[in-house]
Image (cartoon, one colour):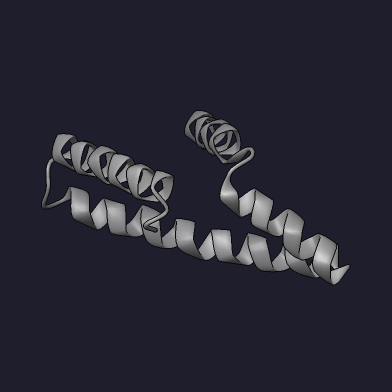
Length: 88
């Protein structure tokens, strides 16, 4: 249970105010159907999280965790720079 609550807290804080939340706000205000937007967003997040968790487990069997963290960090920076300059 401790790991589950740690994951919940980390993801909850990381997702506050991100582009996904802003997209959901925009979609709900445009459509006037907040429950359908909520259900769609939760389903999408569940599927992508499922894929990330289980692909991560498989990847960790062949690539050391330190390398995965460094590559993920580098990709995060690259995407941030591309978004900053309007290239992504």
